[in-house]
Structures are given as structure tokens and as C-alpha cells.
Image 1 (cartoon, rainbow over the protein chains, first blue to last red):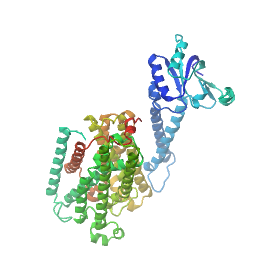
Image 2: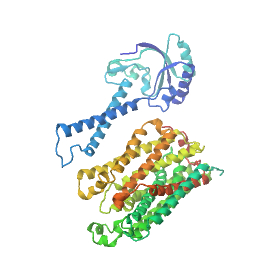
Image 3: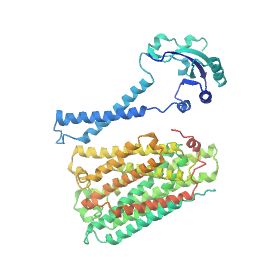
Image 4: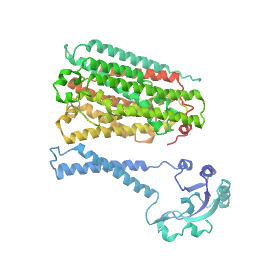
Length: 197
Length: 413
């Protein structure tokens, strides 16, 4: 568990066409966007939020060459030093025959490594729980959370978000990190919590 | 249509220079190498073989390379692609070289086949075929008449279908903005001719043409991967040529809607199809290496452990190791200098690739990579530059009424 409890002003938008200018204005005014939660990947939102490019592909490259070297060293050690076999009169160091395996292991290392790294970066894992600012962020709502400092006037931020086109605005004190727990046990369905939805 | 793109003086100078160098090389070869006498006569019979082998290698390579322009238009049309519209005049310009290059290639092929150059194609000699069980078995396919007719028909079809697709594109310039119905009709017409072109392309470049033009040099040997491997070779070089001309036009203030995003996508084609080429190259090599059947391994014996050992590995370094390591990063595919360098490297690399397809079967250990080879290559490059430059000055460089143009303008990877 990391992060600690912080205060957030949360604004909900029901259209990405409203969200984009809002993100721009919030950044221009100088408020700190904690994150924007969307029901689907929104093209160009990372750029609008000013997030840096991911380094996931660099990690992928490193995993891939690890796979390549693992395969080559492993096969060549086994087939030339540890247990040389005569296979169809081919030389022991039969590089062409190893290329498919080397390729497979390269892809396997890169794929598995990148998926795990991605999960780690997004703090996704079984039995790990994070605060949801609004349950409808997984359904049809674009949710923007603005982090407050001691000096932030939250009334002002709320008014600002309403002006920017937010349909629903509230203040939440939330844990920023993850903790152990399961959603199905601890959280009721949204339609059970809110009558008339 | 007010369109004024003047080719920069340097371009014209380079075009003239390359053609000049090429013509000198051609004349030098025609005079010094005695290519028109009977095969195997004279003091140095291998010099005549060198003349024809080099002409064959260059004409086939550059013709298949410029034909990729129309293949690109064809498959993007069939896939209902929109991103390439802002740059589609560039592959159109490259494909407009096909008629000239087709005629040159056809004359060279006919001179080889009807001139009885059995040092290039063993199957043109009737006596050899009669005394050879394999060649007489293949003689329904490998005979001068079928070879000439099939080559002529295929070059003509590339020419005519390409011309039709280009003229459809020019029609849209004159028509003005299209409403839904006209646009729909126009797109469907494009799809019709593009699919015809793709079918012809598949039956020629995708299968029979490389068998006839290149693989039949080693007439006893065959590989079912060969045509795809040749296609991949010329396709990746063709994409590189498209990239080169895009960068050239951007540097001269043209193609206002083409951004780094478009170049990035062309770069992805160059990167991905370099790997595709390697995949085919390796599949062909590994199966033959693994099965180890004498009549198949002969092809690779001369290349891997014979006089072509250096070229064999150079081929892999130029066309696989360099592209995969240098072009992996996103920033490289958006950088004009690096893209120009890589495009030139890939075009040269696959020229070497075709060179090592042709030379071992014709010249064995007497092949050169000298001034004559590069001079003839200069001639063909000059012809491409001349025709493409001519297209650029005569036609608008943006297909501004294409229904998908907006999709291309806002293209974002």
C-alpha cells in the first residue's frame, strides 16, 4: 500500500468532446490532474493530459533480447557441450535449426514480460483493490480527478469544473495506492446503491 | 488546374548524370564484352555472359520495384484505406515508370531468349533440353515461346491496368468535389480495377514471373518459396522508393497534407516487410538445409560455402540486421535523414539480393561487382528519376477530390 489519503475534486463528463477542452483548461489554469478515467481508450487523451511516452516498448526490447540469449545459450550449451547428439549427420552447432525456437522464445519473453510490466505499472492484479472515483467510469462516464493541496480552494475548483461542462461534481477523500481486497465482496452493484438508475 | 512544380536543378542534373553514366557503361559493355556473338566464343566468353546477366538482374529488379507502386495503390484501395490518400500520387508516379521499364526489360529478355543465351537460361538450347530428362519434363513451361508470350502479356497487363487506375485518379482532379453518389461510384470503379490488378499481380509477381525470369537460370532447381521471396524483396525496396520520393517532395515544399504520421506508416512497411523478407528467405534456406537433398542443396552450396559466402552474409546484414536494429524506434521512422539513409540501404541491399540470385547460376566464380554493374544500375535509376520527375511536373501532387482525403489529413498513428 502506497500513497496515503488525499483530497480530490471529481468531475464527471458524459461526452469526450466536452472532456478534451476541459482537460486543456484545467491544465492551463494550473490544477493538477490526478487521472482521467474513461470507459474506453480515448485517442489522444494521453497527449492532451501531457503524460510522457511510455517506456513499455523499451522494456519489451530488453525482454526480447533476454529471450534470444536465453534460447541461444541454452540450446548451444545442451547440444554442443552437455549432451551432443548426432541428428541426421548435422553439425552439433546447427544454428539454422535453432532459429525457430530462438524466435519463439524471443516472442514469449517479450510478450509475457510486457504484460506483467503493464499490469505492474497499472497496478492490476488479482486481490488488489484501488479506489474508484465513480463506478460509472467503467460504463459510460468520463471521470476526471483533480488532486487538491493545502492551498487549493475546492469550492473554486468545483465551480470551475461545472463551468467546463461537468454534469456531476463532488469532493472525495481517497486512498491513492492499492490495498488487498476483492471488489465482489466489498462493493455492491451500482444499481443497488442508487435508486432509479 | 493550376499546378506548378518545377524540379530543382540538382534533380535534373542527377537524372542526366545517372543516365549518362549508364549509357556509357552500356556502350562500354556492348563494345568491350562482345555480347552479340555466339555463346562460348571469343577470348573471354564469360564477359558476354556478364553483360547479359547484369542487364537481366537490373531490368528485372527495377521493373518489379516500380511495379510495386501500383500494387500499393491496389491493395490500399481494396482495403478501403484512407490514410495514404495524401501521398498516393507518389506511388502513382512510380508506377508510371512501368511502361518504359517494361519495354526495356522485354527487349532484354527477348534478346537473351531468342539470342540463344544458354549461358543465362540453359533451357533455351534445344540440344541441352533434349538430352536432359528434367529440362524436357519442364519444357512445356520453360520454352522460348511460352516465356515470350507470358512475359509480354503480363507486362502489358501491368501497364494497362496501372494506366487505368492512374487515369481514374486524374479524373477525380477535374470532377470537383464529389457528392456521396458520385464518390461511391468512383470508389467502386477503383475497386474493380484494383482487384483486377491484384489478381494479375498475384498470378505474375506472386508466382510465375520470378520462376520464369530468375529461377529458371538454375533450371534444374526449384523452390516454391522463390516467388514470394522475390516479391518481398522488391516490395520492401518499392516502399523505400516511395519513402524517398515523399521526403524529396516534402523537402521541396510539396505534399502539404503529408505529415510525419504518414512517413511513420511507410517506415512501418519498410520495417515489417524487411522482417517478412527475412522470414521467407529463412524458410526457403532452412527447409533445404534441413532436408539436405543434393539436387536442392546445390543452389545454396555455391552461395554459403562457395565464392558467394561474403555476399550471402552481407545480404542478411543489409536486409535484416540493419533494418530491424535501426528502424525499431518510432523516432527513426519520423526522421528524414535516417529514413533516407535506410531507404537507400534497403534498395541497395535488395539489389545485391537479386544480384546473388542471378550471378551464381550464370557466371559461377567469375562474377564481378564492379563499375559495369553499378553503371548499368545508374542507367535504370536515371530512367526511374526521369519518368517520376516528369510525372511530378505534369500532374497535381495531391488527389484533392478523393473522397477519403479528410481521413488522410487527420491521420494519426
